[in-house]
Length: 53
Image 1 (cartoon, rainbow, N blue to C red):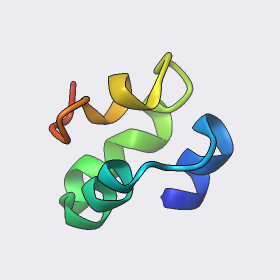
Image 2 (image 1 turned 30 degrees about the vertical axis):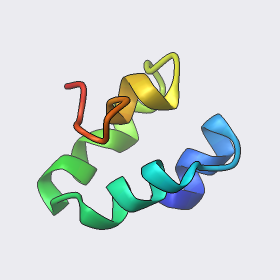
Image 3 (image 1 turned 120 degrees about the vertical axis):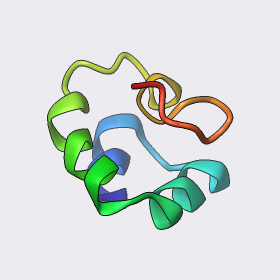
């Protein structure tokens, strides 16, 4: 997932990499589709590390 996010949004900041590591399988399962619509990494993952969805 980190590789896909990196290809879409560029180098991941530490908070985003940590968010991916700590996220449930269910939430990660939603990201591959949402990655196409999200205007930014913050919009997809949430700026403070909580999912915006």
